[in-house]
Picture (tube, helix red, strand yellow):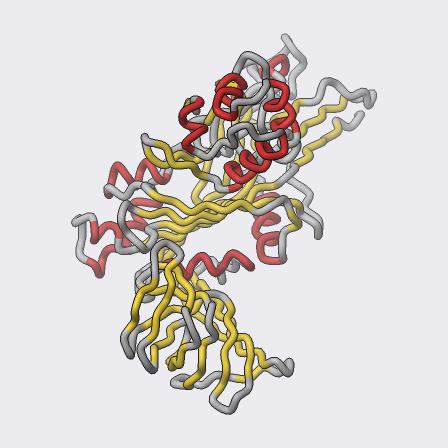
Length: 446
């Protein structure tokens, strides 16, 4: 467990002598970032090790009365699992990963005690469990089963929408003026164009400067660029054509694995722009499911056999794009064989194992820096709804098949992970979890 003491909280910007609203705003901002950086390194708020502090540490860091701290925490309890416990630990864990409600009805239709699982983390440990029903925490195991490991071809599409509302094609080699403030990437670093730039668009998301210019980096000052320098467009920007017409130039990624079909992340697709062009990519898709022992039993208590097998319920899906050159960069194989080498390694992942721990141990690629974003609970789009329905109706993943309608509530977390000092990520991943899975079943009278 990672304990945040008063000195840590002050270093993280705790509002000194602030009111309950200032404390709430600061904690909300802290939780939304997904990660915090301490002297020991980068800490994920929803990682396998819980992040905790105490009411006393919060009181000392902010220099206010205990009641003020409690008021600032209470406002977060509904949308963040911030446990407000006097004298014990206050956990800062961000939104819950999933919640499962199981109700068992007997022949007469009377309902026994419901089993409610509200874990803080998608892997372990599971908390807030009805231990009277489950008896021991060891009876619950969270697993991640590999669904697909494939090489991916990443393509970029452009669309130019004019101010008049018309859409026109932008032929390769067209010269346009990119408006000041446009968001671009240079050598993996994100920045904004300082003033209008004349550029040539050879195709895809790449543009080249027709004359020298400058970009103001998000993490750093202005960066001068020579004529012919290559930039990458980011999402959508305003451009002016040679004939004076203006419009919105949008770029989007198109990921095509060999057999899985197109991987569509909808509004999160632009995260794949963090990979450099030409790098071989490998897709790892895993389903997250919980396996319970002793929850469901076909036999009466104390009568008959040894009990039923493990009971399973799917919780969500992870899509992970990895740099296929990782084994080559680790000195373990030639570049041409690197993606296949990585795919063989991924296919050997254990269902309870951690991908990042395995990558660090095998190749030396650790998540030393990260950018992680959370989406609020929402209804899944068509592509994500289809993926969640696929796992919800798989009998190998669900002991009782889930019913997923046209409005499947879920939340997602997207992240990019980097090695220290590198501008290009070695992993970009999206996790999608059911916000609420209601499993109910009835034993029919004979």
